[in-house]
Image (tube, rainbow, N blue to C red; front, top):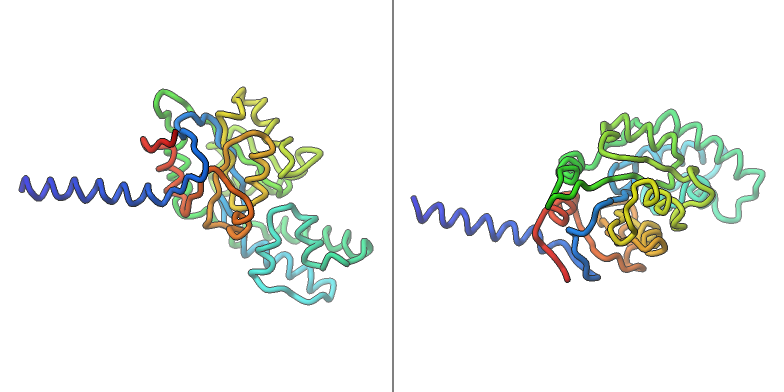
Length: 256
């Protein structure tokens, strides 16, 4: 029996090491120094892919344009609704079509934004772990999306995530969107946390650039909408699933 217990302990340690080894540090930092986590929304906390795709194609059908494939539309997500609609129409689309198309998309998505959208598996458990004080430090969490603020907040609230965050900001909360650092700078100011003690977490190069522009640490997630865009940037750390995020900040794994 003693030998069996020893073997079980060994296997547990090996499994834990295997899980943690999937966390890829590309720049050195100590996760224990982080007091504020700023999350992207779409492709990071929530899987809103299908509702966005269907809303874009509904807009294209309405204006008698050719519908696009799921993967193409998903690759256009991240810079906010105007950029998404403009890309879907083709960058050569004239303004007479663009503005009505944008208005139609926004109206359709407002109604259908929660038809299929879900929280990624494991995210509620991860947020619960991250909200638990660690090493005597109470971490704060916020959301910064390029989606407009009202639907962002409505989705976060409807999916039961609102209580985890001290603030939820959207793409129209400020004069500029990500990757401009205005949004993260406002969150830093409100929370009283320094940029060196904060990290932005997202699935695209936009989030990484936002963090770099604001002096924050950066974490790329490869399970979201735009992991290929991370190839063109270098986040401080990469993770492949939500559980690794909790492991990153909840473990003794340190890079000096």
